[in-house]
Length: 241
Image (cartoon, rainbow, N blue to C red; front, side, top):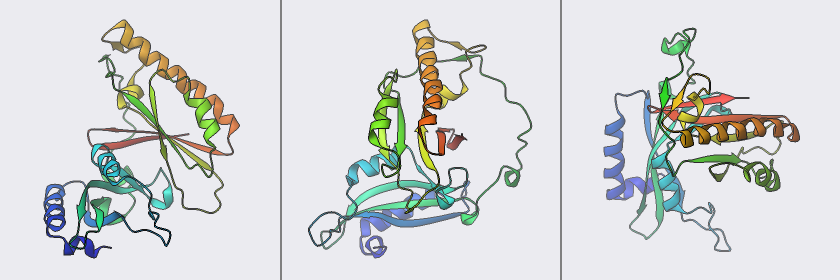
């Protein structure tokens, strides 16, 4: 499948331009890959049954993080950009460019020379949340049943978008539940942070109350790992419980 890029001039030109854009940044190694094709099984069903245009939109709006052994505490890099192409034989595929930190090695704060002992102060004021803001909850449906997800999302004060995770393991001792949310919701502190309006403050407070209720509902799960997942200034931020 990797030959699809080499055999398709438009795709080859695109990956070369993307690689050039990301050279010299925080990634120690930049590689190209095919992450989806329209290949079907003997019954004519797609082997990877996803909408390629939606896949490309999700990659380009919020770059996917690559993890060491699916461990959210060990990021290895990012799936940076994707695009949909068609080769000379009429086969559709999604080409992507991937950036690995330190050539694919797992980085620690110590490796980056960051002093994590310096306390960070809370912001003094935050804007209202955008009208189209949403929370994403992602689970592996083989481990976490859809009924439970229905129960924990039905009373969210803002829109919840559900996504599918795949842990690629026949047996797992833990259940990973990833909550994607705007960084503003993480840094808000009800005791010291002002919000642009009273209505905006109520939304922040409502979401935080929902988070607290979600944590109590973790008692229903079997050894869960809860990953609050966000991004800020092109950096991924995760808080693991």
